[in-house]
Image 1 (cartoon, one colour):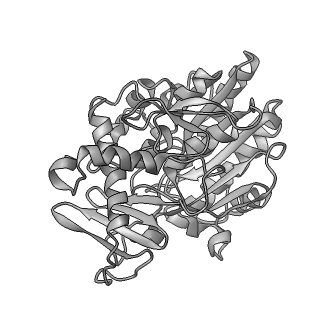
Image 2: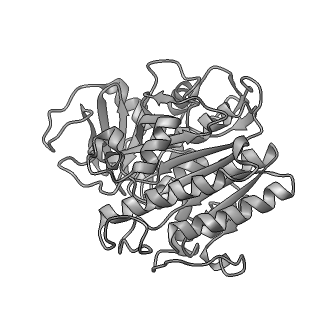
Length: 404
């Protein structure tokens, strides 16, 4: 969808100043008079840690006991949350896997229509793997399914990642314990990933891997004997994926590179985004855990944040200086009161800030409602300032992508 054609817009000279104010952060200096490219100064001592970013299929926050679940679906994640850093107010940008991948890799608000992962002219983008590769990490994309689906392999391969998917399992001697149309069982995906990590460590290289699971997806099939719930239902698939993650961490803990590694576990989106409102924020709430027993003390991060903030926050934690075109914030450095999040469908674009939600929609005037409103006919709130902010984020994201 062409943003300029269908959505409210600011004049371009106004837009430039507005988006520059919104992305500004301490330690960042703009490199020119136009656009958002800025030089991020390194903060603190650099960390030479391996990074394993696991994006979990359809993992709603509500599946975890820390967010109210009472049937014990995620015992492994609950333990990791207790022993790691749990981010409690993180929101997915969209309702599909490619939206999550877009936010995690290039740190952009969701442009209307298709995710950039599926669009033409999406090669050579500024992205998380590229930034890490420039600083000495080897970047991998590791997927349990066939990566031609949704253009995933082409996208990551054209943006600096070494691409691995289910077709590589046989050559790596991976025993497949279960598979369906979406991918190999998550435990086998993690075996495939471990093979790659062993090679990188043996070669003396730091690695960054974005690993994408598939088992928590219809038809919810998984190997027998792993958990106490049957296959064929979402609850069983959630508990199996949780088991597989726990098993992966146990196996990784036996490796010599484990102590110097950070594991980030986050959802691509929630299990269900439908609700009584056009954009129900609670249905975009996802968990994230940073687990590195030797590097991060247990705790919680309770600030509102977006999936697109994860990359800049990671780069800040690693103590890297770099040139950024990310729209996201380093949440460890952001001043209080500037937190915000983005939620979207194919057509509707939402902006959450200070307890309010702005909704931009095709051929409709912008509206502002209470952030967690439960009804479609919730009373609108006059807030032209917040509307202009929302427009600036989304309009500039679309503009900069089309400008290359």
